[in-house]
Length: 415
Image (cartoon, rainbow, N blue to C red):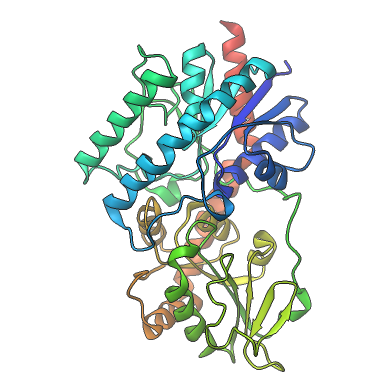
């Protein structure tokens, strides 16, 4: 086996770094040399303190490196904001750091997150092979077919970026490598795909042990009650207070049979009835409800994979990582998409029979409760979740992704 050097180029987004961490760890275990281009603090937190990270500048962002958008922005307007106000500035900010990383590290292959297009454009400019790390499948399924003007506008932005950062003579879409696209999902979840140019390899989620995880009071869990996990990810806390409050009330109505963990990184439930001063507090955790029989625990961060092993259902925003991690463990979902790729992923969950969709902005306590009852009591939802989870495990995850990357380096070496 030829030892190769892989440079992972990642944006400042937890859900986009986590899948790459598993692949990088697998490659390192096989003897390859790994480095990162991104935000050192985030990469070190997720990949471990010993990871070699070449720093890249990023646009000014909010907590957790997230783009700050008006909470009520939805649909095409949210997508245009994401590209014009975050992804394009991100590419321009990261490009000098990526170029410096390539010059110093001398990688054989770049592994570039789909939203860190600076990596693809720098690789194109220097004539280096690169693979796409696709942490969402939305763009494989014709998500923009109903928005041709938005699609054309994004293409125009990418053309302008190429003229500044890449090879002006290039013509491919920098979101899709012509060499290799690693899709961290399977067709059992996505359904038929529109198929971008370039070879897509469906490898399923690349789950791996996470070097640093928050503590959790495991003794709080009641084995006699089903556990429900509620999370809106790390990038949606600005929009979440009303929805999380509805979840809290629906769950409290079912406290005889359920316990719940609500992830609240922005502290939006502070002051909400039942989770404020009369709750028990310990290290940032807020146990809401009667002190002798707590039913809801609110925490800014959780060891998500470990909790999913015990969960009976997940309520979430249909973020791709959260959905795939839940389905890996055969856990059915209530999905309430907010924006970006989330409506597409939510539709995939429903089509796969693995959950129920509700409206994020207009869901009442009774409707959320009905959806939750459905995924907890209808065995078809759990069967659908387990079916998708089985396809994930069969796809090979990080090990299969690493093998595809090795094959890419072998092909390039043979030229």
